[in-house]
Length: 306
Image (cartoon, rainbow, N blue to C red; front, side):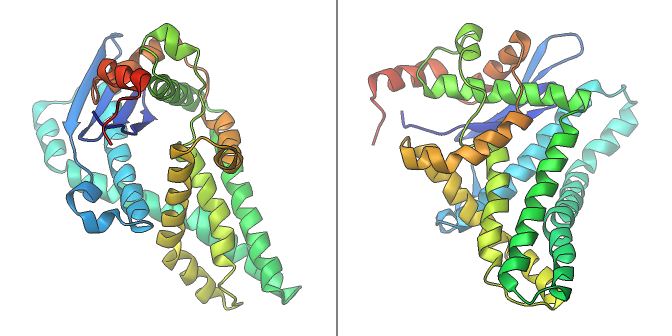
C-alpha cells in the first residue's frame, strides 16, 4: 500500500471523502440511518500526466474539488427534500449535469465578483488620494481579507451552517485520526484536533494572501485593466496557493507550521466540535474510499511502498 492523502468536505448532514480512486458521500438521513454512496473517480491529473505538473495541477485540483463538492452537496440535500412524482424525478435526473454545471458557473462568477473584483474596484478610488501602486494594492488585499473573514464570521452564526461546520470538524478529526495511525473509532476520532493543514478554508485564505503579492506586479490605475488582470491571474494564484498547501500538508517542521498557522486560525470559524453521531458519519465516509485498518497498520509499521 502507498501513502495517500484523502480529503473531503462537509455537506448537509453528512461528509464527503475523496480517495485515490473514488469519493464517498455519507449522510445521516431523517430516519437517523447512515447511507453511503461510493462513486469511482480518478482525478484528471492521474489520467493525464500533463495536468499534474506544479501550478497547473493546483488549478485542475481546484476545479475538480468544486465540481465534486457541488455535486455531493446537491446529492445530500435530496435526502431532505419532499418526495416528488416519478415524472419530475426523471426530468430532474436527465438535466442534473447541466444544472450542476450552471450552478457551479454562477457560484464562481459571484465568488470572483465579491472576493476579487469588488476589492479591486473599491481600492481603485484611492488613486484620487495617492499615486502609490504599493499602497493601493496593499489596501485592496486587506479589504479582500476583511470581506472574506466577515463573510465567514457572518455565516458561522447561522444555525444550519453551524451544523455543517460541526460535520467539517468531524471530517478533519477522522482524517487526523487516520494519519496518526489510530483505529477509526468514535473514541479515538474524538480526541484528535478539528484543524487540518490541507483544509479548503486554509486554501481559500492562502489564496487571499498570495493574491496580494501576485497583484503587486500589476501597476495600473486604469480600472478595467485592474479588473481584467484580477480575473486572468486567478489560475496562477490558485496554482501557487495549492503548492503552498501541498507543501504544508506533506511536511511536519517549524517552517510548515508557521506558514500554516493563519489558515489554521481561520478554521476556528469554519469548524466546530462534532457530536458522536457526526463522527460516525465521517468514519463511514472514510471507510467508503479506503481500507483504514490496512492503512493504519502501515502507518504504525512505517511500511508504505516507495
